[in-house]
Length: 327
Image: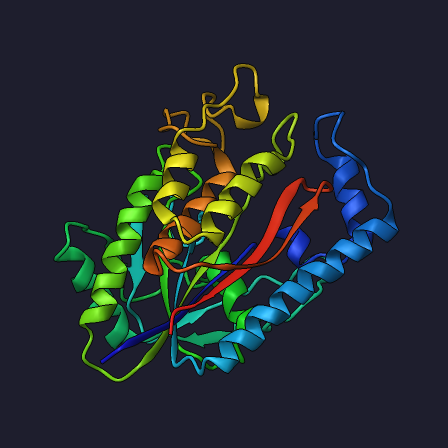
């Protein structure tokens, strides 16, 4: 029988890959709220070091648990899908998938595969998960081929493959719409994660599975008057630490965007803004927290080890790392 051996949680994005000397430059070119700290290079270097220590701890834990395959939840940000068709959930069932062929304009930190690198999928496991959640009332889209090969698969999936694996562990990518309104809710994410766990428990193959959430926490990148709600993030992590995935969903969905918060204004249609209304909860990148909720639901009830939370005001973003041993 398949065995869930652990769940893993990490942030992704610019401040998990850009050198800290570029953080200040980013901070000074973004329309960030005036009361958000503008921290020194030394402080940013210290925070960047903690970010990469977080990745290392997760990588070592994944190795210790002898994971055979990963299921990775993250959001698609127009890499695979666009507004001609944007699924709430999509599972990639192909044999291989690619990183974007685009050459980075800026230097990067951390572990990075070359542009266009080919990672391994796991069609059998992916199909089992697809059918398993369909039996439980979900009807995700599926992709057997790369929708846009030149763009690569969702960047959050690639970030997990690069930072947590030796590039050879097969991965089942699960892409969620967590950026473009109307997105899935925290509770829908919770229920989806529960369905994935039940599907895993039905698999007869002897395989050790790890499940990963890639993204979050609080961030509204590039939006006017962006700020960092550390209080919201800390409450999310408290609930995660206690194994209360449903509580995480309820906490997320009950958040009401304050009137006049321009950093979460989704009403004006733009290149990456649909202009459609959203359900309760924070907007834009913070919605990636729902990937954490889904994965927390996979190991629901089991306490989670919080590795670190790094308040990076240069973005601003809450970078966090956590893991749960489900054995």
